[in-house]
Length: 108
Image 1 (cartoon, rainbow, N blue to C red):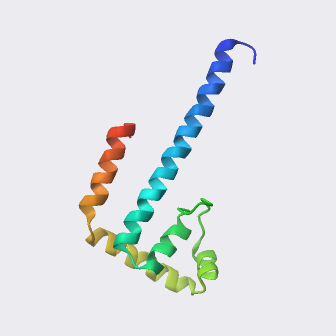
Image 2 (tube, rainbow, N blue to C red):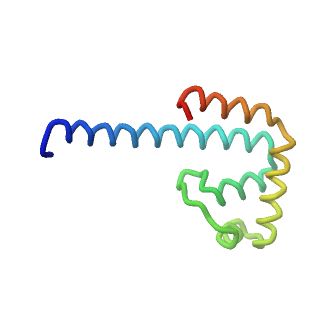
C-alpha cells in the first residue's frame, strides 16, 4: 500500500464485503423460513435452487433445476409460478414487515 489512507480504504472494502455477506446469509435464512411456512416442499426446493438461496449461492436455470430435482423443465416452471401465486396469497404482511425491517436497519 502506498499510503495509510489506501490501506484503510482496503480494510473498509473488506469489512463492507463481510457485512454484505453476513446480510445475505441472514436474508437467505429468513427467506427459507418464510418459504417453509408458505410453500409446499417441492415449490420451496424449486425457488431455492433457481435463485441460489442455498448454501452454494448458485442459481440454476429451469433445465439444471429439473435435472437436479428429477422433474421436467416444464414442471419446474409450473412449480415456480404456483409458488409465486402462493406467496402473493399467503401471509404477505409478514414478508412486507420483514422487508421494512431490512429497510430500517440497512437504509435500503
